[in-house]
Length: 174
Image 1 (spheres, rainbow, N blue to C red):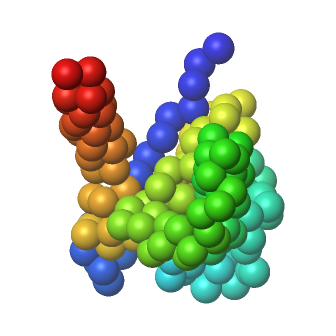
Image 2: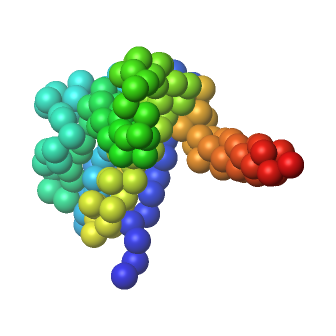
Image 3: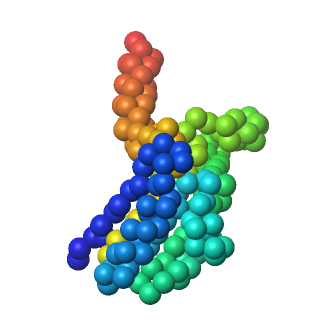
């Protein structure tokens, strides 16, 4: 089965990313492609362009064209809930520690917004795999680069943390 074509509109703020994404989505839908237009930009300009209230549920805009706007706060809350459940399961033996105070710190973790968008992106890719084209209206360049860089940055962090863990275990064995 062929995967959908993913098209990303990136650029500085105010250069016409949202307008271009909307126009290309309409063009492709008129050519017979089944298109989903996805706004990952917190500004959510697609609602203004199409003069329709969009949400995380696909809304038809034209034949062969639907659109959604990702609610970043929803995805942040969902991610934090999952992390809290994992921590509670993994560290259930630490009930004497007040884990709740650590959860408050997690809410301010660097990369949290980007990770929430990656979770949303992952679900969109999976849920809408039967579409011909997914058009992503991205946030301005600086925010989009953080989104695209987070998987690589996470792998670097994990690699270094695993090396640190091995070093600690080796020193404990001495």
